[in-house]
Image 1 (cartoon, rainbow over the protein chains, first blue to last red):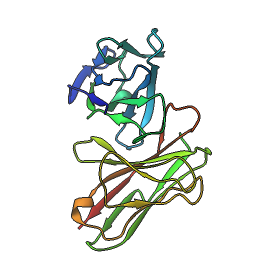
Image 2: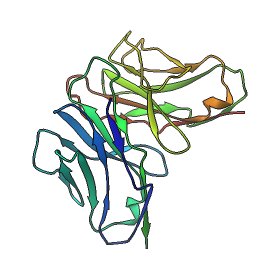
Image 3: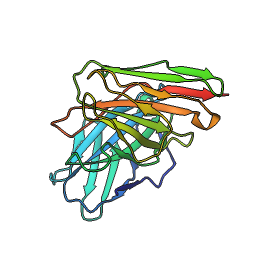
Image 4: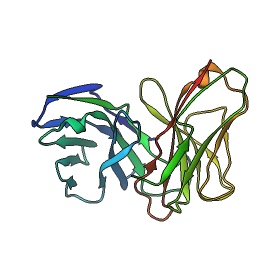
Length: 118
Length: 113
């Protein structure tokens, strides 16, 4: 079974600065997807960014980018130019490339609470 | 915003009552999921479905049951609610062929007193 570990329960950053959220995972699979989801206080989970394990290039979405280190099984999220609206819980998640056989769905880390200081 | 809806948003109910949490999506997704989110915010998969008449139990054992009679509808039922069922329940859906991102509803906050 896969596991996802987020070692930072809470992070705080000044508005306009850069912050990096850590995520490590454990799997025996070679192909999979990794995601960062954001859950604002309204509670709806929103996809921030995703990475296919077979792609070496790190995914980027505007101010959000990842540092994907497959050998180290590390998948950190960098938020540049932090904004007040970035304040939320951030979840790292793993998903097998192949559905079927056992439980399907995302495996989540415990989350990191990101605080933006004005 | 994703086209997946959960009702009610909040529910406070007495012990022993039967409850059904509704989840509907208008995206035509085959796969649907129920996650339980505990007070520490960690999410656990409790049920999933690959399509109509398909339901499976997830990683976390749950006393709830689900049904999938229509593609767009995936309700979760508790026959006899207990205080230990107090939690946040999140419904999600994704496409079958492209095993990628899941879209989430806004969740149902259930409190059993």
